[in-house]
Image (cartoon, rainbow, N blue to C red; front, side):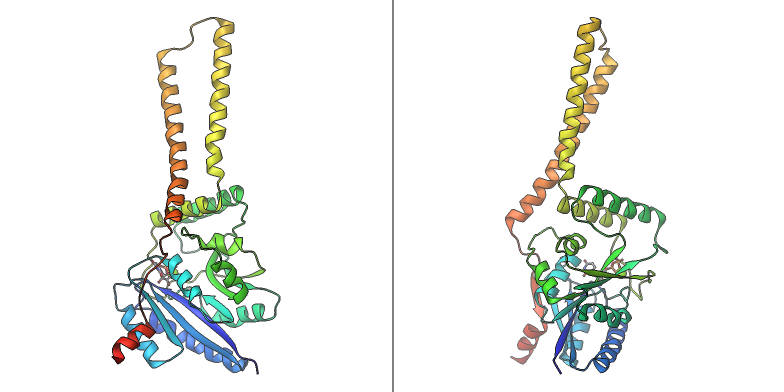
Length: 319
Ligand code: UDP
Ligand code: MG
């Protein structure tokens, strides 16, 4: 029987409450899958994203108990995007799974996902929420608007309500790793690389324990990140508005010349100054955003820094 390895990547930030539940559940599913498919093996790669609680201690314990459990601990919090990247870069599997620690990405989906991907029909299996139940109304509204806007202005289609819960082939992971950009927006990257993806529909599940780190503002900023990373359309705004105002100026000049009368009252001038000034500042802001992104890319800083792994920890302990 040919051996196949599945790497399960789990980004963790302050997840001490939920990790024991996650381990029980993932081990149950892994056992079930290995029994059904002899030759199927697992490795669990946890990325501790600079947690301030006992997450790292728990991960040390897990990896000491079971060789299949590995971990990488960042020197500080770098964000989930960096966690997923580090996981993929250090994954050894023929297949790679990315899932949250909080059981909002139920491990019970893995057998079905494995079925789709191992059949060769798909390169990736993911989940798509059928409803936004339990989510604040305002957030749903903004989320929907975000997908509408980005799909209008970006060439990369980003499907709505998809998650970072992914079951991928090694080919797809290597393709993702070939995209070494600093400003990472995974939803866009997953689409950009292409490949055949199967979306499994599911109802949203609440967090098993602990609390989310995403606030409304963080999500809003993340959506701007997505737009600037995958579209340059906002830059055209400046051009379009510039043209509109140019035409307006020409029309007004013609009208003054033809009518030959005084039509530039002070209020009109003040209004125009404010309007044009506002638009200019807005356009400069948009330009600035792209410049800022370019600046970060050019600096070429590492996307994460590893503070400790199960291997370095073991070596230090052995000495
Ligand atoms: N996470 C992370 N780094 C962060 C924030 C979150 O690695 O800075 C992890 C977190 O531990 C979880 C996953 O990313 O496994 C999703 O986070 P969360 O549940 O807070 O987000 P939500 O499900 O509310 O979108
Ligand atoms: Mg969650």
